[in-house]
Amino acid sequence: MIELSRVTHTFGKKTVIEDVDLSVRKGEVFGLLGPSGSGKTTLVRIMTGMIEPSEGTVWLREQQMPKRVLMKRFGYMAQEHALYQELTAKENLDFFASFYLRKKKKERIDYCLQLTKLTEDKDRIVSTFSGGMKRRLSLAIALVHDPEILILDEPTVGLDPVLRHEIWEEFHRLKNEGTTIFVTTHVMDEAEKCDRLAMLRDGRMIASGSPSEWKEELHVESIEDVFLHYGRRKV
Ligand SMILES: Nc1ncnc2c1ncn2[C@@H]1O[C@H](COP(=O)(O)OP(=O)(O)OP(=O)(O)O)[C@@H](O)[C@H]1O
Image (cartoon, rainbow, N blue to C red; front, top):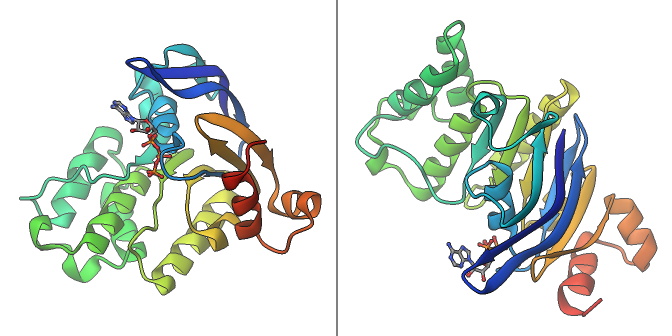
């Protein structure tokens, strides 16, 4: 569903992504881990077509990115907010939904507001929202057109554990319906909820596998131990 082949990216003279191959299958939840500054956000931006890689290719649904028709196939949630601060939450959702949805727009907006617990605040101006509310709205926007692929850069940062749990339940519900989910995370219990994981360090993909494969391979109890192993050592 998502294929990266020999992707390298440099900013000026600095190589931040180096020769990355990655394959995400339809209907799986794939987690990308890596220390801060390892290149996760850059890789996500390459996947979504926001950055053209210096070398290599990205394919979504067997079509090479960037491609305009593919935009409606995926939902993207960035780390920074891309919200209209002077519009209400509902107006923001309506604006983004209008690009892709004609039928069922109202139902989808109501559903996403409910999922992210924003129904009561839907008519408030976004500039009055807390950081967590803005993140929830960004997530609602990524989901509103019911995309086949979700690409989410640390989607649950700043959310309380109850909401985080509910959002992960929704991810698994979506996965069971066939949605492919690619997520970056620093939260180790979220990493445990992924079908497969990959570890990026200094722009290189240094390991991949399912959470249980990783733990077995390294004889450790938790993904946190795996993270510490790969994050610290040169391998
Ligand atoms: N536009 C840019 N110009 C120059 N350097 C950049 C740019 N964007 C990112 N970088 C550099 O690329 C490297 C990887 O950054 P990136 O944001 O992709 O890491 P990350 O793994 O997502 O980090 P974090 O977990 O802290 O969000 C860093 O050294 C960063 O300073």
